[in-house]
Image (cartoon, rainbow, N blue to C red):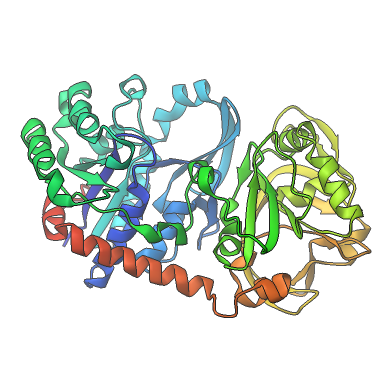
Length: 487
Protein backbone atom coordinates (compact mmCIF):
# COMPACT_ATOMS: atom_id res chain seq x y z
CA UNK A 1 0.00 0.00 0.00
CA UNK A 2 1.36 3.44 -0.90
CA UNK A 3 1.85 5.97 1.89
CA UNK A 4 -0.75 8.68 2.31
CA UNK A 5 0.03 12.30 3.12
CA UNK A 6 -1.77 15.32 4.53
CA UNK A 7 -0.34 18.81 4.99
CA UNK A 8 -1.13 21.34 7.71
CA UNK A 9 -0.64 24.99 6.77
CA UNK A 10 -1.30 28.02 8.94
CA UNK A 11 -3.02 31.34 8.46
CA UNK A 12 0.08 32.76 10.20
CA UNK A 13 3.08 31.84 12.31
CA UNK A 14 2.64 30.27 15.75
CA UNK A 15 -0.89 28.99 15.14
CA UNK A 16 0.12 25.63 16.61
CA UNK A 17 0.97 23.61 13.50
CA UNK A 18 4.07 22.03 15.01
CA UNK A 19 2.22 20.75 18.08
CA UNK A 20 -0.71 19.52 15.99
CA UNK A 21 1.65 17.52 13.78
CA UNK A 22 3.48 16.11 16.83
CA UNK A 23 0.21 15.13 18.50
CA UNK A 24 -1.14 13.54 15.34
CA UNK A 25 2.10 11.60 14.84
CA UNK A 26 1.80 10.15 18.35
CA UNK A 27 -1.95 9.48 17.97
CA UNK A 28 -1.46 7.68 14.66
CA UNK A 29 1.51 5.61 15.78
CA UNK A 30 -0.55 4.62 18.84
CA UNK A 31 -3.06 3.22 16.35
CA UNK A 32 -0.38 0.97 14.89
CA UNK A 33 0.40 3.08 11.81
CA UNK A 34 3.90 3.77 10.50
CA UNK A 35 4.15 7.57 10.61
CA UNK A 36 6.72 10.30 10.09
CA UNK A 37 6.69 14.10 9.97
CA UNK A 38 7.89 16.19 7.05
CA UNK A 39 8.55 19.91 6.69
CA UNK A 40 9.92 20.91 3.30
CA UNK A 41 11.46 24.19 4.51
CA UNK A 42 11.88 25.44 8.04
CA UNK A 43 13.41 28.61 9.48
CA UNK A 44 14.72 28.22 13.01
CA UNK A 45 17.90 28.49 15.06
CA UNK A 46 16.65 25.65 17.25
CA UNK A 47 17.97 22.53 15.56
CA UNK A 48 18.71 18.91 16.38
CA UNK A 49 21.31 16.42 15.19
CA UNK A 50 19.89 13.49 13.23
CA UNK A 51 20.64 9.79 13.19
CA UNK A 52 22.19 10.17 9.71
CA UNK A 53 24.65 12.87 10.78
CA UNK A 54 22.91 16.08 9.78
CA UNK A 55 20.64 18.65 11.38
CA UNK A 56 16.96 19.47 11.14
CA UNK A 57 14.58 21.83 12.90
CA UNK A 58 13.95 21.05 16.56
CA UNK A 59 10.20 20.78 15.88
CA UNK A 60 10.73 17.99 13.36
CA UNK A 61 12.98 16.14 15.81
CA UNK A 62 10.21 16.34 18.40
CA UNK A 63 7.66 15.17 15.83
CA UNK A 64 9.92 12.24 14.94
CA UNK A 65 10.08 11.37 18.62
CA UNK A 66 6.29 11.56 18.74
CA UNK A 67 6.20 9.09 15.83
CA UNK A 68 8.68 6.90 17.72
CA UNK A 69 11.25 7.24 14.95
CA UNK A 70 14.83 8.42 14.86
CA UNK A 71 15.07 11.88 13.29
CA UNK A 72 16.62 11.89 9.81
CA UNK A 73 17.47 14.72 7.43
CA UNK A 74 14.75 13.70 4.96
CA UNK A 75 12.16 14.96 7.48
CA UNK A 76 13.31 18.58 6.96
CA UNK A 77 15.35 18.82 3.78
CA UNK A 78 15.79 22.62 3.83
CA UNK A 79 16.55 24.49 7.07
CA UNK A 80 17.24 28.23 7.17
CA UNK A 81 19.16 29.45 10.23
CA UNK A 82 19.09 33.27 10.48
CA UNK A 83 22.55 34.77 10.97
CA UNK A 84 21.76 38.43 10.22
CA UNK A 85 18.69 40.63 9.87
CA UNK A 86 18.58 39.92 6.13
CA UNK A 87 20.39 36.62 5.72
CA UNK A 88 20.54 32.98 6.78
CA UNK A 89 22.67 29.90 6.73
CA UNK A 90 21.13 27.48 4.23
CA UNK A 91 21.18 23.85 5.37
CA UNK A 92 20.20 21.25 2.75
CA UNK A 93 19.75 17.60 3.70
CA UNK A 94 21.33 18.34 7.04
CA UNK A 95 24.52 20.01 5.82
CA UNK A 96 25.43 23.68 5.54
CA UNK A 97 25.46 24.62 1.86
CA UNK A 98 25.85 28.40 1.96
CA UNK A 99 25.08 31.64 3.75
CA UNK A 100 22.78 33.81 1.64
CA UNK A 101 20.92 37.08 1.84
CA UNK A 102 17.13 36.84 1.88
CA UNK A 103 16.95 38.27 -1.64
CA UNK A 104 19.55 35.87 -3.03
CA UNK A 105 17.83 32.90 -1.45
CA UNK A 106 14.43 34.02 -2.74
CA UNK A 107 15.86 34.14 -6.27
CA UNK A 108 17.60 30.76 -6.03
CA UNK A 109 15.31 28.68 -3.82
CA UNK A 110 13.29 27.13 -6.64
CA UNK A 111 16.33 25.06 -7.57
CA UNK A 112 15.93 23.16 -4.27
CA UNK A 113 12.49 21.72 -5.09
CA UNK A 114 13.86 18.51 -6.72
CA UNK A 115 15.85 17.76 -3.55
CA UNK A 116 12.79 18.39 -1.39
CA UNK A 117 10.64 16.08 -3.49
CA UNK A 118 13.34 13.41 -3.45
CA UNK A 119 13.50 13.59 0.35
CA UNK A 120 9.70 13.37 0.58
CA UNK A 121 9.61 10.29 -1.65
CA UNK A 122 12.50 8.67 0.22
CA UNK A 123 10.78 9.21 3.56
CA UNK A 124 7.40 7.92 2.37
CA UNK A 125 8.64 4.58 1.02
CA UNK A 126 8.36 2.73 4.32
CA UNK A 127 5.36 4.51 5.85
CA UNK A 128 1.60 4.49 6.08
CA UNK A 129 1.20 8.24 6.66
CA UNK A 130 3.41 11.31 6.21
CA UNK A 131 2.15 14.30 8.20
CA UNK A 132 3.43 17.46 6.51
CA UNK A 133 3.83 20.87 8.14
CA UNK A 134 3.89 24.15 6.26
CA UNK A 135 5.75 27.27 7.41
CA UNK A 136 4.56 30.72 8.39
CA UNK A 137 1.46 31.95 6.58
CA UNK A 138 -0.11 30.21 3.61
CA UNK A 139 -1.50 33.53 2.36
CA UNK A 140 1.79 35.33 1.64
CA UNK A 141 0.97 35.70 -2.03
CA UNK A 142 3.90 38.10 -2.46
CA UNK A 143 6.23 35.14 -1.79
CA UNK A 144 4.31 32.54 -3.80
CA UNK A 145 6.71 32.38 -6.75
CA UNK A 146 9.12 29.46 -6.33
CA UNK A 147 7.62 28.72 -2.91
CA UNK A 148 9.00 25.63 -1.19
CA UNK A 149 7.31 25.77 2.19
CA UNK A 150 3.57 25.87 1.53
CA UNK A 151 1.54 25.69 -1.68
CA UNK A 152 4.62 25.44 -3.88
CA UNK A 153 5.42 22.10 -2.30
CA UNK A 154 1.78 21.02 -2.01
CA UNK A 155 1.27 21.57 -5.74
CA UNK A 156 4.53 19.87 -6.72
CA UNK A 157 3.78 16.82 -4.56
CA UNK A 158 -0.03 16.93 -4.97
CA UNK A 159 -0.61 16.87 -1.21
CA UNK A 160 -4.04 17.84 0.23
CA UNK A 161 -4.05 20.63 2.81
CA UNK A 162 -5.77 21.45 6.11
CA UNK A 163 -5.61 25.18 6.93
CA UNK A 164 -5.08 25.97 10.63
CA UNK A 165 -6.17 29.19 12.35
CA UNK A 166 -5.46 30.41 15.89
CA UNK A 167 -8.56 31.63 17.72
CA UNK A 168 -6.49 32.77 20.72
CA UNK A 169 -5.08 35.75 18.84
CA UNK A 170 -8.53 36.76 17.52
CA UNK A 171 -9.95 37.10 14.02
CA UNK A 172 -9.83 33.41 13.27
CA UNK A 173 -12.94 33.44 11.05
CA UNK A 174 -11.57 36.29 8.95
CA UNK A 175 -8.11 34.70 8.74
CA UNK A 176 -9.44 31.34 7.53
CA UNK A 177 -12.05 32.69 5.14
CA UNK A 178 -9.74 35.50 4.02
CA UNK A 179 -6.98 33.08 3.09
CA UNK A 180 -9.30 31.52 0.51
CA UNK A 181 -10.04 35.00 -0.83
CA UNK A 182 -6.41 35.95 -1.53
CA UNK A 183 -4.70 32.74 -2.63
CA UNK A 184 -4.73 31.43 -6.18
CA UNK A 185 -7.81 29.30 -7.00
CA UNK A 186 -5.56 26.37 -7.91
CA UNK A 187 -4.01 26.53 -4.45
CA UNK A 188 -7.40 26.92 -2.78
CA UNK A 189 -8.51 23.71 -4.54
CA UNK A 190 -5.90 21.79 -2.54
CA UNK A 191 -7.40 22.87 0.79
CA UNK A 192 -9.71 20.05 1.93
CA UNK A 193 -10.49 21.34 5.43
CA UNK A 194 -9.88 24.03 8.02
CA UNK A 195 -9.09 23.72 11.72
CA UNK A 196 -9.63 26.14 14.60
CA UNK A 197 -6.89 25.80 17.21
CA UNK A 198 -6.10 27.08 20.76
CA UNK A 199 -9.72 27.53 21.84
CA UNK A 200 -10.51 28.63 25.40
CA UNK A 201 -14.04 28.57 26.78
CA UNK A 202 -17.23 26.71 25.89
CA UNK A 203 -16.89 25.11 22.41
CA UNK A 204 -20.68 25.23 21.99
CA UNK A 205 -20.42 29.00 21.75
CA UNK A 206 -18.38 28.63 18.56
CA UNK A 207 -20.74 26.22 16.80
CA UNK A 208 -22.08 28.98 14.57
CA UNK A 209 -18.51 29.99 13.75
CA UNK A 210 -17.70 26.46 12.61
CA UNK A 211 -20.78 26.42 10.38
CA UNK A 212 -19.98 29.85 8.93
CA UNK A 213 -16.38 28.89 8.11
CA UNK A 214 -17.49 25.67 6.44
CA UNK A 215 -20.17 27.49 4.45
CA UNK A 216 -17.90 30.28 3.23
CA UNK A 217 -14.92 28.05 2.40
CA UNK A 218 -16.83 25.04 1.05
CA UNK A 219 -14.74 22.56 3.08
CA UNK A 220 -15.32 21.00 6.51
CA UNK A 221 -14.13 22.90 9.58
CA UNK A 222 -12.53 20.79 12.31
CA UNK A 223 -12.41 21.76 15.93
CA UNK A 224 -12.33 23.93 17.77
CA UNK A 225 -9.34 22.27 19.45
CA UNK A 226 -9.00 23.53 23.04
CA UNK A 227 -5.80 25.04 24.37
CA UNK A 228 -3.30 22.34 25.40
CA UNK A 229 -1.98 23.55 28.74
CA UNK A 230 1.03 21.20 28.87
CA UNK A 231 2.52 22.57 25.64
CA UNK A 232 5.17 24.29 27.77
CA UNK A 233 6.54 20.87 28.71
CA UNK A 234 7.61 20.33 25.08
CA UNK A 235 10.60 21.95 23.34
CA UNK A 236 9.67 25.18 21.55
CA UNK A 237 10.49 25.69 17.90
CA UNK A 238 11.43 29.34 17.55
CA UNK A 239 12.02 32.66 19.29
CA UNK A 240 8.31 33.48 19.48
CA UNK A 241 8.26 31.19 22.51
CA UNK A 242 10.79 33.40 24.28
CA UNK A 243 8.27 36.17 24.84
CA UNK A 244 6.99 34.33 27.92
CA UNK A 245 9.93 32.04 28.61
CA UNK A 246 11.11 33.20 32.04
CA UNK A 247 9.97 31.18 35.06
CA UNK A 248 10.58 33.55 37.97
CA UNK A 249 10.03 32.01 41.42
CA UNK A 250 10.69 33.89 44.63
CA UNK A 251 13.46 32.50 46.79
CA UNK A 252 14.55 29.96 44.21
CA UNK A 253 17.98 29.17 42.74
CA UNK A 254 18.31 31.97 40.17
CA UNK A 255 19.73 31.41 36.69
CA UNK A 256 20.15 34.45 34.43
CA UNK A 257 20.42 34.12 30.65
CA UNK A 258 20.97 37.15 28.40
CA UNK A 259 18.62 37.10 25.41
CA UNK A 260 21.09 37.42 22.57
CA UNK A 261 19.79 38.60 19.18
CA UNK A 262 20.78 35.33 17.49
CA UNK A 263 20.20 32.99 20.42
CA UNK A 264 20.26 29.37 19.22
CA UNK A 265 19.18 26.04 20.65
CA UNK A 266 17.61 27.76 23.65
CA UNK A 267 15.71 24.53 24.33
CA UNK A 268 18.92 23.58 26.19
CA UNK A 269 17.31 25.58 29.01
CA UNK A 270 13.94 23.81 29.03
CA UNK A 271 14.82 21.28 31.76
CA UNK A 272 16.01 24.12 34.02
CA UNK A 273 12.80 26.02 33.38
CA UNK A 274 10.85 22.91 34.43
CA UNK A 275 12.59 22.73 37.82
CA UNK A 276 10.22 23.98 40.54
CA UNK A 277 13.16 25.19 42.63
CA UNK A 278 14.72 27.26 39.85
CA UNK A 279 13.97 30.80 38.76
CA UNK A 280 15.10 31.02 35.13
CA UNK A 281 15.27 34.65 34.00
CA UNK A 282 15.70 35.43 30.31
CA UNK A 283 17.08 38.97 30.47
CA UNK A 284 15.82 41.28 27.72
CA UNK A 285 18.10 43.81 25.97
CA UNK A 286 18.42 47.01 27.96
CA UNK A 287 17.96 45.22 31.29
CA UNK A 288 20.86 44.32 33.63
CA UNK A 289 21.67 40.78 34.58
CA UNK A 290 20.26 40.28 38.11
CA UNK A 291 22.85 40.73 40.85
CA UNK A 292 21.34 37.92 42.90
CA UNK A 293 21.88 35.29 40.19
CA UNK A 294 23.44 32.04 41.37
CA UNK A 295 24.41 31.05 37.85
CA UNK A 296 24.77 32.96 34.57
CA UNK A 297 24.44 30.91 31.38
CA UNK A 298 25.66 32.34 28.09
CA UNK A 299 23.60 30.37 25.55
CA UNK A 300 24.27 29.18 22.03
CA UNK A 301 24.42 31.72 19.23
CA UNK A 302 24.06 31.59 15.46
CA UNK A 303 26.37 34.61 15.05
CA UNK A 304 28.85 34.51 17.91
CA UNK A 305 30.91 37.64 17.21
CA UNK A 306 27.80 39.69 16.44
CA UNK A 307 26.07 38.49 19.60
CA UNK A 308 29.21 39.18 21.63
CA UNK A 309 29.08 42.78 20.36
CA UNK A 310 25.41 42.94 21.42
CA UNK A 311 26.32 41.54 24.83
CA UNK A 312 28.82 44.38 25.27
CA UNK A 313 26.39 46.97 23.91
CA UNK A 314 23.90 45.99 26.64
CA UNK A 315 26.55 46.17 29.36
CA UNK A 316 26.17 42.48 30.09
CA UNK A 317 29.94 41.99 29.89
CA UNK A 318 30.26 44.26 32.93
CA UNK A 319 27.53 42.31 34.73
CA UNK A 320 29.22 38.98 33.96
CA UNK A 321 32.58 40.25 35.24
CA UNK A 322 30.96 41.59 38.42
CA UNK A 323 29.17 38.28 38.95
CA UNK A 324 32.48 36.46 38.66
CA UNK A 325 34.26 38.82 41.07
CA UNK A 326 31.47 38.22 43.59
CA UNK A 327 32.08 34.47 43.47
CA UNK A 328 29.28 33.51 41.08
CA UNK A 329 29.16 30.60 38.65
CA UNK A 330 29.20 31.05 34.86
CA UNK A 331 28.53 28.47 32.13
CA UNK A 332 28.90 29.06 28.40
CA UNK A 333 27.25 26.69 25.94
CA UNK A 334 28.57 26.51 22.36
CA UNK A 335 28.68 30.16 21.19
CA UNK A 336 28.55 31.22 24.84
CA UNK A 337 31.62 29.03 25.48
CA UNK A 338 33.46 30.78 22.65
CA UNK A 339 32.55 34.20 24.09
CA UNK A 340 34.14 33.31 27.45
CA UNK A 341 37.58 32.87 25.87
CA UNK A 342 40.28 35.38 24.97
CA UNK A 343 39.53 35.73 21.24
CA UNK A 344 37.12 34.59 18.52
CA UNK A 345 38.64 34.66 15.04
CA UNK A 346 36.66 34.31 11.82
CA UNK A 347 39.30 34.49 9.07
CA UNK A 348 37.03 33.04 6.38
CA UNK A 349 33.97 35.16 7.16
CA UNK A 350 31.91 32.13 8.19
CA UNK A 351 29.42 34.17 10.26
CA UNK A 352 29.91 37.63 8.79
CA UNK A 353 32.76 39.93 7.75
CA UNK A 354 36.17 38.31 8.33
CA UNK A 355 37.96 39.45 11.46
CA UNK A 356 38.62 38.78 15.10
CA UNK A 357 36.91 39.85 18.33
CA UNK A 358 38.25 39.92 21.88
CA UNK A 359 36.31 37.60 24.15
CA UNK A 360 35.35 38.09 27.78
CA UNK A 361 38.65 36.60 28.93
CA UNK A 362 37.22 34.42 31.68
CA UNK A 363 38.58 31.23 30.11
CA UNK A 364 42.13 30.88 28.81
CA UNK A 365 41.09 29.54 25.39
CA UNK A 366 40.91 30.85 21.83
CA UNK A 367 38.43 29.95 19.08
CA UNK A 368 38.83 29.99 15.31
CA UNK A 369 35.63 29.63 13.30
CA UNK A 370 35.78 27.27 10.33
CA UNK A 371 33.28 26.49 7.54
CA UNK A 372 32.99 22.80 8.50
CA UNK A 373 30.19 22.19 10.99
CA UNK A 374 30.57 19.46 13.58
CA UNK A 375 27.34 17.46 14.02
CA UNK A 376 27.44 14.52 16.39
CA UNK A 377 25.26 12.87 18.99
CA UNK A 378 27.44 12.40 22.07
CA UNK A 379 27.53 10.36 25.26
CA UNK A 380 29.64 12.25 27.78
CA UNK A 381 30.64 12.20 31.44
CA UNK A 382 30.71 15.41 33.48
CA UNK A 383 34.28 15.74 34.76
CA UNK A 384 33.41 17.31 38.11
CA UNK A 385 30.60 14.99 39.19
CA UNK A 386 30.94 11.86 37.07
CA UNK A 387 27.31 12.26 35.96
CA UNK A 388 26.38 10.95 32.52
CA UNK A 389 25.29 13.41 29.83
CA UNK A 390 23.48 12.61 26.59
CA UNK A 391 23.90 15.56 24.26
CA UNK A 392 25.04 16.63 20.84
CA UNK A 393 27.64 18.81 19.15
CA UNK A 394 26.49 21.37 16.57
CA UNK A 395 29.09 24.03 16.00
CA UNK A 396 31.59 25.54 13.61
CA UNK A 397 35.00 26.28 15.03
CA UNK A 398 37.87 24.84 17.04
CA UNK A 399 38.75 25.96 20.57
CA UNK A 400 42.17 25.49 22.16
CA UNK A 401 44.11 26.78 25.14
CA UNK A 402 45.41 25.89 28.61
CA UNK A 403 41.99 25.74 30.29
CA UNK A 404 41.10 22.84 27.99
CA UNK A 405 43.41 20.79 30.24
CA UNK A 406 40.68 21.13 32.87
CA UNK A 407 37.79 19.68 30.83
CA UNK A 408 34.12 20.26 31.43
CA UNK A 409 33.39 16.68 30.33
CA UNK A 410 34.91 13.61 28.77
CA UNK A 411 33.65 12.25 25.44
CA UNK A 412 35.02 8.86 24.36
CA UNK A 413 38.01 9.44 26.63
CA UNK A 414 38.78 12.86 25.15
CA UNK A 415 38.60 16.22 26.91
CA UNK A 416 35.53 18.31 26.07
CA UNK A 417 35.12 21.97 27.00
CA UNK A 418 37.13 23.93 29.55
CA UNK A 419 37.05 25.06 33.17
CA UNK A 420 38.81 28.04 34.77
CA UNK A 421 41.45 27.52 37.51
CA UNK A 422 39.00 28.67 40.20
CA UNK A 423 36.37 26.21 38.90
CA UNK A 424 33.68 28.90 38.67
CA UNK A 425 33.72 29.43 34.88
CA UNK A 426 33.05 26.57 32.47
CA UNK A 427 32.40 26.20 28.78
CA UNK A 428 31.14 23.31 26.67
CA UNK A 429 30.03 22.57 23.14
CA UNK A 430 27.51 20.00 24.41
CA UNK A 431 23.89 20.89 23.69
CA UNK A 432 21.00 19.16 25.43
CA UNK A 433 23.07 18.55 28.57
CA UNK A 434 20.47 19.57 31.17
CA UNK A 435 17.99 16.91 30.01
CA UNK A 436 20.17 14.39 31.87
CA UNK A 437 18.63 14.27 35.36
CA UNK A 438 21.79 13.25 37.32
CA UNK A 439 23.87 15.99 35.68
CA UNK A 440 21.22 18.64 36.23
CA UNK A 441 20.99 17.66 39.90
CA UNK A 442 24.77 17.82 40.22
CA UNK A 443 24.74 21.41 38.93
CA UNK A 444 21.73 22.60 40.93
CA UNK A 445 22.40 20.73 44.15
CA UNK A 446 19.60 21.10 46.69
CA UNK A 447 17.66 23.33 44.26
CA UNK A 448 16.98 20.35 41.99
CA UNK A 449 13.80 18.35 42.42
CA UNK A 450 14.55 14.67 43.07
CA UNK A 451 11.24 13.83 41.42
CA UNK A 452 11.70 15.63 38.07
CA UNK A 453 12.43 13.09 35.32
CA UNK A 454 12.67 15.43 32.35
CA UNK A 455 12.70 12.99 29.42
CA UNK A 456 9.88 10.93 30.92
CA UNK A 457 7.92 14.16 31.27
CA UNK A 458 8.34 14.91 27.55
CA UNK A 459 7.06 11.44 26.68
CA UNK A 460 4.06 11.90 28.97
CA UNK A 461 3.30 15.28 27.44
CA UNK A 462 3.33 13.74 23.94
CA UNK A 463 0.95 11.01 25.07
CA UNK A 464 -1.29 13.60 26.70
CA UNK A 465 -1.23 15.72 23.53
CA UNK A 466 -2.26 12.70 21.45
CA UNK A 467 -5.11 11.96 23.86
CA UNK A 468 -6.14 15.63 23.71
CA UNK A 469 -6.42 15.48 19.91
CA UNK A 470 -8.21 12.12 20.00
CA UNK A 471 -10.81 13.69 22.27
CA UNK A 472 -11.36 16.94 20.37
CA UNK A 473 -10.67 16.08 16.72
CA UNK A 474 -12.28 13.66 14.32
CA UNK A 475 -9.01 11.99 13.38
CA UNK A 476 -10.74 9.43 11.17
CA UNK A 477 -12.21 12.27 9.12
CA UNK A 478 -8.80 13.94 8.88
CA UNK A 479 -7.21 10.67 7.72
CA UNK A 480 -9.93 10.36 5.08
CA UNK A 481 -8.61 13.61 3.54
CA UNK A 482 -5.11 12.18 3.09
CA UNK A 483 -4.14 11.01 -0.39
CA UNK A 484 -1.59 8.59 -1.78
CA UNK A 485 1.93 9.93 -2.19
CA UNK A 486 2.76 10.35 -5.86
CA UNK A 487 6.11 8.84 -6.77
